[in-house]
Image (cartoon, rainbow, N blue to C red):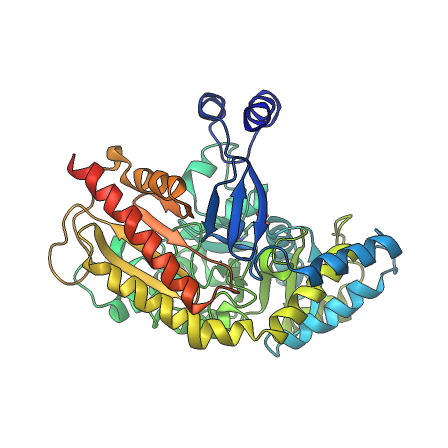
Length: 454
Ligand code: PLP
């Protein structure tokens, strides 16, 4: 029963990113079953999963093609590794297919087990690249405050979540941060486009401060996900690309969330107009059905690693896991057959954008933003004019958490980042389901408003 599971859970399971005492007091919600965009908990309540699990179940729950691929591969060969000049057919076939669906500079992949491991690989690979280029002093990687790049020592260091740095003595040496391109936080008095150029300029300032001959790479998410679905101004990424080119530093696109269709293109860098040298992926590559991550390695880096590098002393037991690769192959093929990326670009993405735009008539909603099938709305105390800025609530009121509670209680999974409510629903969502989602969100906003007024 639910109560039994909750008791065992509280007694034994240390959950990630969870206050252990709060969990013991309230008990976890036990999610038991999924189908399409819906989940059911252990008491039979249906939830619209507008977060695709953790931004990953792109093809939705219950896709038989992925289940069959896993079953067939487990039956034939559940595991073999890719160390020491061995490999398996699914790993080879996936490497080839990834070279096909990613932008043309990518012909090679390094497999890992997760996004965090992918970003650890990035750190080791860019430093290796500059060593091989005869510039070993190029060690510094620049990333952004409020970015998220995972939970390993390197991933959390690249990330700009200060509460994560506070535990465990982070960041590790050689990683430094610039501010995020968040117009609401930093853009007062500027148009969004002016602000985009200003925010990109912070990268150039940092490069000059560190010394251009010491900087190895810049890493960022095309759209910050865990930071609150912060869609940068259109001017931002092209200017970042120009700055990276000017100083010869590597550009790394962390596509763990934005990869595999989320923004209405196969990869977020295509939406934002950059040509990164490296690209981290995970999550959507298998739609989360089994763990898999990795790094797409552009020809600039691959050529040096392959022709000059000898052995790259790095890798994971599960690099190129055959079951994970078989599931990824089935996932990508299904995305193609069902034209999911095109549907996000032409149908569901524009509809979601219109829905979020229309939510701005709600008394609690200030700025709204969307990009493909990821979107955010800012809860505000007062609207104050037309630019969407609004007056924030006192953070102590935790209005975002109040709203999230109403969502959870009314069949909707929506995430709160402070007072910013965010979603990233499965890409299989239909236009009718976008409208269903809109109705649920409005209902939960109304309930939140009643609480705020009370
Ligand atoms: N990078 C980004 C942009 C992410 O959003 C995440 C996870 O949410 C990661 C990296 C870390 O991936 P994982 O949790 O698979 O290690």
